[in-house]
Length: 424
Image (cartoon, rainbow, N blue to C red):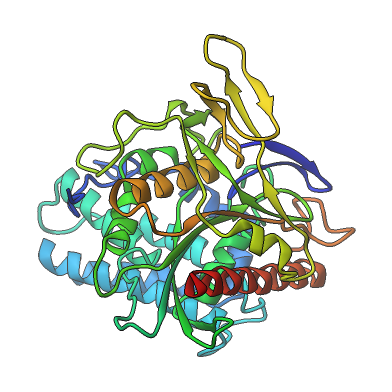
């Protein structure tokens, strides 16, 4: 992830054969009752206010009460799966204007989902049932809650020849030790767009299905991206016609990232974990061998950049950082990598936004190279002037207006990309 400076301080560019669906649960799933770094932030004032002012503060108590009624593991698993999916549906409904507001926090806000999920995982992690519960089974419950509450297991693309099918992914808020109030516009866009339809230039409908991912290195190493995307990348009656991974990027602009690199730069994630290494590909995942240092977008970036999709400029971003063949020192290349070079940062940096783009496009190359897809960076979402202190208000009119504008432009960009695919 490339670190940048804004009025809010240092932000990072982020978000900033079959793969078995029984891939190991993410490494964050504890084998004994405990709480995580992310769950520990729940005690802060900002998360509690976000939950209270959205009506999501009741989820943890209701979830805990339901767990207490479970008398066997199978019952607990069904309940956890149902509650995870219900949380995702409620967050999507709220973002799209269905159901009660639950409070005065604007409906477009992605943060209630994030903090409510953590309040539920904390309940599950510390739950002591009356029946034996092994570490592996607790991990499976946590995995079911994570997948369901992120929309990862409910992507439902329609069949038929007269509809385009689009898969979009976003991210959780991140860098919360600096400011627990932060929102991620990519996650907000995912909630606003899930299950919606846009019309291509030819009038053909294009259905959008979305999911969100954690800002955690270990989950990615365990294959959460590939497990979610593979069923929709494979050829079939419900195959995706287009995919876009999205994260928060640079101030004041969108970037279509041309090239993605196979390198993790080590910047701490939401669990305060750091990883500096070549992007690890989990066993059992269809992939390209030998593992390439670079993958490239197949989004129609020229058309997207020229389309005039909204208030923010859209840039065809081509720069990378590489170690040239035969050299040992990284250098920046404004026009993409040179032959035989080793990746040190893709266009999206060396954090999880670059990694999700690399993983998704590598999976595309392994199973369906003709599938158009790539990565889109949104502008940085900032609070309004006078509200830059982390102890300030959790929302303000400028903050909401910018998030709504970013989501609207994401929708327009997807419409352009879908229209180009339909034309092709």
